[in-house]
Length: 160
Image (cartoon, rainbow, N blue to C red; front, side, top):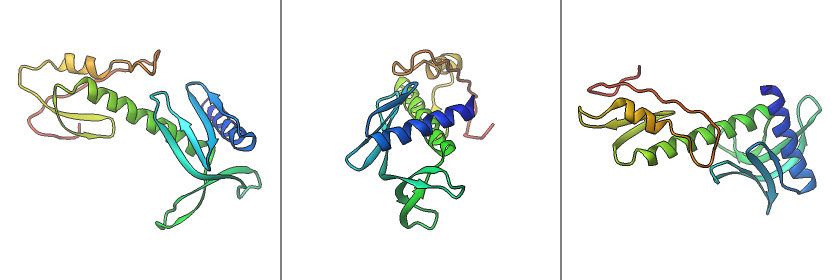
């Protein structure tokens, strides 16, 4: 199923690029406009790729390329792949879920975050269960997703 999703996303991006029509896979949509490829996320935020073009990958198949900063820190044409598109989408949605949790817990003193963790300073009588329940709330823009958060209490930050 995961590899099929990779293919579906890749095909939707190629269709948007070739036919210049918006496409959609599940809760994510794709559009090429004004020299940019936009990937619209469920939160309303979008990812942007500069000057997308169809290209040929090293195996002779069709691939999408775009302009960006390469591994040597130079502006160049970058070839993407189905797995990379999906990785970017998943990471972006994960960030949006974390940002939603930060807004939900804005009454707390959030002192940092690391990937999918929030670091919060609260009084000793604060309820860890209540904080976890609030952090695990479903964002209004992603109905149907089941989230769960767990936490730990300590006197100083440490990776569990």
